[in-house]
Image 1 (cartoon, helix red, strand yellow):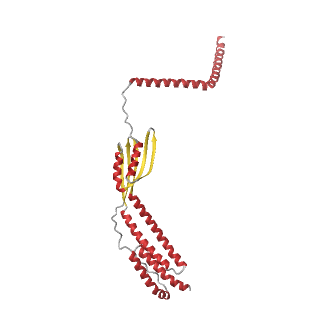
Image 2 (cartoon, rainbow, N blue to C red; image 1 turned 30 degrees about the vertical axis):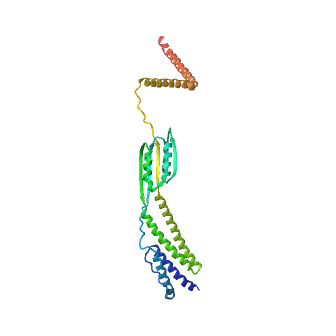
Image 3 (cartoon, helix red, strand yellow; image 1 turned 45 degrees about the vertical axis):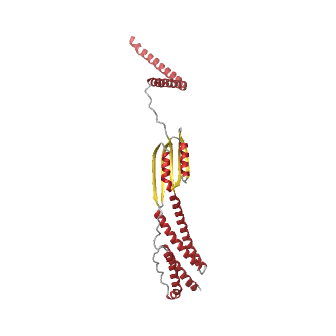
Length: 303
């Protein structure tokens, strides 16, 4: 009974291998290891027609060459830093430019630096309106501090993804046919594992293709708006103000010295006064002692 199951499952597994090799990369199938003579003679009759049929069907679904696409898919990005007369007004105008062009605002941010207000606006605009929107944004500025643009051509990647998707979908279709012909639960589980792997890769390819479509359809522009600062005018030399400033500085210095003296007297007075008194007493005692010594030494000489 086990030998019969092996004879039934061997052709199905061989067909599955041929389908995966033919649809996955177009490479020549690697010959299966030689089986015993009895098994090979029993399996060769049903396996050969099935393998030939599956290989022919898989080859019919494969494109002769990679599909040619004339679609130009370019992901565009731009960054601008503008000096504007009024930040709030320029921010509203930039938002209107994005919406009127068929785009949308991704994010915006405002902040204050002293009395000056700045803002950053990130917008998505249709790719065919990218240059027109940039020109309108430049018109809002008193001065364009910086303006950079970049593009990434993803046409080749998209064409490659299309070819991979066609091959993987053909492979999935062949595996589903094999799943219908499964003779037992083990064969169905093995085929279903391969089908899940192929379907997962199909979803990944579709997700990447959708991302490229969305990114190439809408370009991203980041605009930073900074307010115009008034140019300072040089002041004329005024000697009176210089004298006034010097007198003010001298007064502050004198006031500081007086304050320091007061601090010393008040804070250190209770310590310094007793210490000075003790030192004075010691010095006085030493002087008296020295005076008595001199008197004692001169007395015998007089006799």
